[in-house]
Length: 463
Image 1 (tube, rainbow, N blue to C red):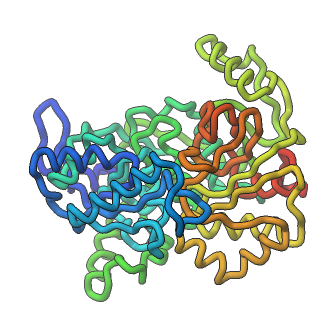
Image 2 (image 1 turned 120 degrees about the horizontal axis):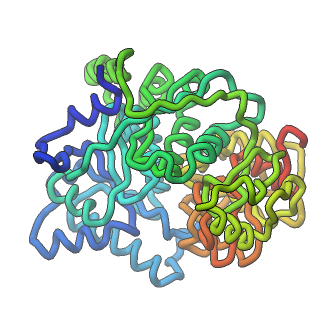
């Protein structure tokens, strides 16, 4: 009678503090340059080594430039953070995929593509979108800097056990509807706090039919409805994706691992603390109109009117629309945009670039649009070139930048100017998230591609 989450969590509990948190063993720890410096400094001050250095993998991603990565980083804060990560990794003996390394990239992209992310694992990183790795049937969640230090020192973490929720997406998706649209639809229905305190398992026909990369997109955005993490039971799609990757088990170890992974599903009679059903047929290509990912709608719909908003949310709703320069009841289809960003740990994988390239093939980028196309890793960049997608993009008037988090959170030079509109495949549309005063419209890769070609918010089905 156990859920998938319970099975993995319970198998990793080292100690249970009566009336308190669990001491949870961590199988894989990912590390980047922003949330790790103080953690390593804490170890140094206490004279402690990293307990199991082979379990930690580091990659700078948030602050790195997406042009001229072979030259010194211009921004002094970014340069210091990247250099500090390099120094800490070398001193403490943990694996680092630094700038210029063929495995460098966004940590949530390189983990899966190298076979470091595996079913049944507990995975943490000092980054909220660690929930991405739950797509493999792993318990993966973001942690704070003090917790990063705890994991480095002990390979364990103290965590209260979340409640469980299952979200079923039943039926088949319509044409032009992507995994990003599924996630944005769920968040708009759940609201940004609707899953607070829960670990979510996604199930149903529409979820089972997703590729691994699409599943990662759905799990990535779990955090945006307040969930501690999201996960999907591993199946043949998962096993096929993992098999043969560098760090995946091989030979007899593979057979053993596979036998275990096949047990990783919620029992038929498992009871969740909460269960919710959605119909895939209700989901259309989507955009956001406000300043949190829950403020979203179908691309052909209108922004809600003030009387459709509950009393508690009216002030923030109006504030959001003022910031975005929109009005209640307005339709956004046809609204002129200035920037398009394809990338991030949400939509920076090879399938996202395939979808975008296939859509723009034989078409031309609109003159009024500045497009930033940023692969999630050098592995993705290599595949783009091997498949000739770079040539298709070039002919349509686009150019590739170098891998990194880029304009998702504008911690490097990739900042959208104040007042400008960006259709972005990233995960957050908070005020100033993509640059001070920037206005972000979240969307999937097909809506982004349609906007890049037409210069305005456009339903990809109509291009």
